[in-house]
Length: 291
Image 1 (tube, helix red, strand yellow):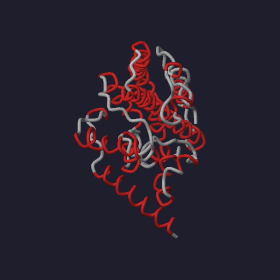
Image 2 (cartoon, helix red, strand yellow; image 1 turned 90 degrees about the horizontal axis):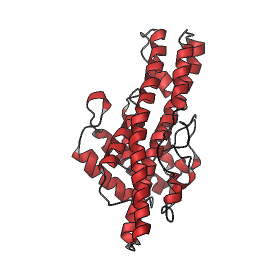
Image 3 (cartoon, helix red, strand yellow; image 1 turned 90 degrees about the vertical axis):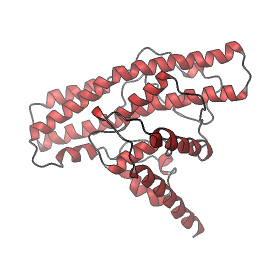
Image 4 (tube, helix red, strand yellow; image 1 turned 60 degrees about the vertical axis):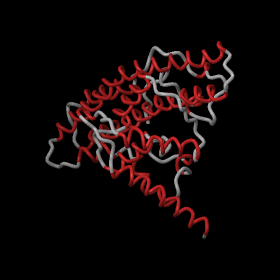
């Protein structure tokens, strides 16, 4: 009984945090770009860093962000926030991830046991809808007045828009990766012994790699949504645009990043806890995941 009461308290705390985030969603300007906001750029990330370091024991760096690291995070926003499904709860989850109030969640058909363990049972029904790859398909069908050919065109345009954003993101990600390899190399060459300097450097590398992996995960989620919509529309609304839609999908999922050295061999002793940094496929070696 006590455990259940604690579970409800934890769920209530999580709900209050997420409602606070949702009540003032991150402001966006033209073309869905994030606008500067003291609340969302300073206060919420500070609270998220505290939760990440204290509650989840994740690495947190106090180093200032470089210009490229800022651009990396700004470009990441275009991928992790799905512009075609603008509902308050999904936006809230993404903002919670971005500010580190929440851990980076995993998409797919079902929530992994590891992700489910991060939340109290009472909160799982609220989180689970974010993992539904049929969400995009339902969104397209939500306006029954739109012609079916327009629906096919929308898939083609959305997949193409995502693909077009990958090269500029990969360019800045490659610069950040090269700087991180140099950062870690400088620690060894200069034989700097300050523990805080080592911890801060490795934590920043971890944060940068998590951002890159988060984008690739989001692209996998989008690809799964496009595949679901294409497959269902083949039955529900057959069209001569099928070939073009499949080609747009293939172009997206075979996209890769180039121009960055491997990061694993540069890490002196690994992050404070297991992470994508050491275990997951490197986005610079792998195409967009197909879920």
